[in-house]
Length: 287
Ligand SMILES: NC(=O)c1ccc[n+]([C@@H]2O[C@H](COP(=O)([O-])OP(=O)(O)OC[C@H]3O[C@@H](n4cnc5c(N)ncnc54)[C@H](OP(=O)(O)O)[C@@H]3O)[C@@H](O)[C@H]2O)c1
Image 1 (cartoon, protein in one colour):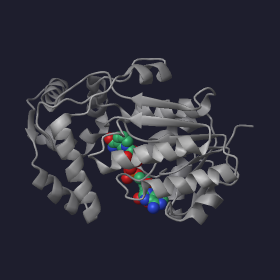
Image 2 (spheres, rainbow, N blue to C red):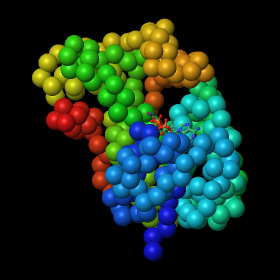
Image 3 (cartoon, rainbow, N blue to C red):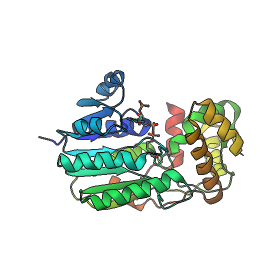
């Protein structure tokens, strides 16, 4: 019988994408959710079971981990308690003999200027030192950051993101990341490994706008949003002040340094080339 995988953050963007790929590989998944009302949706996606709890509550983590054999931890974005949350999961994993702990981190956690990168680095250290068989996944920025601005791109021909229009990113398709995560969970042989996961092309906002323009058949202009606008947008979305501050810091850092990476590891895990930005945009345009 297949081993049950506990998936945290299951109701989020990343969690749902990973859940679908795990289900596609016929793997039984128990989802960790914080509201029972989320269960019906995830059950419809193929989840086999659920546990309701809060990642900040070690007891609810402990009872969720019980009975599982593997664990994929997708933490809440930019959370100040990333390390404490993961420590609770590690404690429960050790107690309940979890055979594979997959931690969804971020590429370049050593970027100390950005708190959530730095916290993920601290967390990786704790996991490595725990003695658990682990795989650390380090994804770069998602192509899916286009989704919230897609209507404006299509209707107004404006591609606006919070960094200058020439700084470069190796954006990656979340669908590829989810597939790679599921493969790592399904296969043996990924223990004690850290994998950087990036897309194939180094693209600026100007390059992305040009690709979109060709796909949708109308002019698209790249524009840089100010950090003040980032702050206002984040508040309008209802993010707390800590998250607002971290978003500004992150985008300032990306504006200065970009986010470049290499696709070789992702290509090796998938056994095919990672998705091109043009292919992603075509998929979005046809949806
Ligand atoms: N976006 C990127 O480009 C990128 C790149 C690399 C790595 N990552 C990493 O990917 C991870 C997931 O990001 P995402 O965008 O998928 O996040 P998301 O859509 O906001 O999903 C986060 C999930 O965590 C759940 N959650 C939050 N706080 C919780 C708590 N205290 N207890 C239990 N559940 C809780 C949320 O529950 P509710 O559904 O109830 O709100 C939600 O389902 C993050 O760690 C991020 O750093 C993202």
